[in-house]
Image (cartoon, rainbow, N blue to C red; front, side):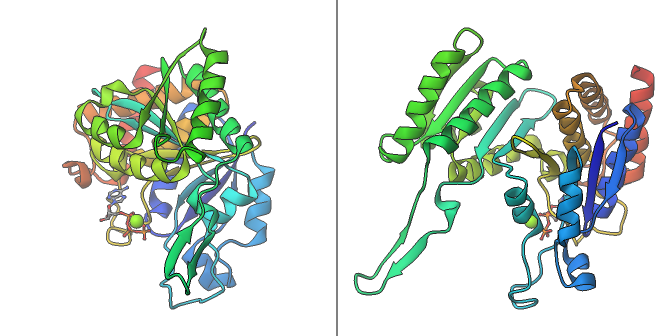
Length: 332
Ligand code: ATP
Ligand code: MG
């Protein structure tokens, strides 16, 4: 039986995660290990992500994560470490996967490298020259593992094409390396899947004008950050956007949205982003059919307009879950 570490977190995390678990229980048998993290946890234990939580995550087959509220920068100075950044590092989750699917016309996936690029945090200011400099780090090893991951993901998910997004015409050395490795790996996979590449600026435009051009996108950390937020605007908001953080040993699945303190406790949070994240977790477990079953049920509920207020409906979180479960029962 698969063991899932459940971190509800703060705010609507405590509403959308239990909703996703109801749906998981409808399609299979799973063992849940509960762990704490977030602002409430910080207030309780003086640590936003206790070691015990990290240990529990490492004992499980995957983590289902809700959302956490970050403390104000002035509060808890020095004591705060970000739960999600800590888990990414501890579990070596180098791939960020964001499906962009409106269940109508748009269906693409953005795979973002999650450990390198300008996020290595090497920024400094040269007082004498009065220039600020940030280092952009792209390694051969880091590029190979994310690009291989993207091709494997594409094949396992019946995708047709992988596109590398870069700015190799200007960043000749860093993105030049990334693109060269992409083409080398693409050549090895060419009997199984197509591959091509686009400049990041052109991609920003194409995503708005003709998103159907893309299937699986693989890109470096900063471009992936920007493009995935841009692309999420194509599908009608945060309430529908799932994500996964994956490494060679562990996987963590979470909605793109945050803890939404403005609507927390009202019972109206849209649970679909978390339910779709749970479906990605089932794919990761090799339970593709169960994942598809959930996505089909969500699709029908969306078509019927049985949705929460953020999508223009008048249903509560629990009612949307009931509708999805009804669809699952009718379908199975
Ligand atoms: P945090 O600091 O935790 O990120 P936030 O205030 O930035 O919190 P987000 O969760 O990022 O909130 O959401 C931004 C907006 O989108 C908020 O108005 C929130 O109510 C709305 N929103 C986010 N997720 C959902 C959801 N699942 N259902 C309904 N509305 C949502
Ligand atoms: Mg936010």
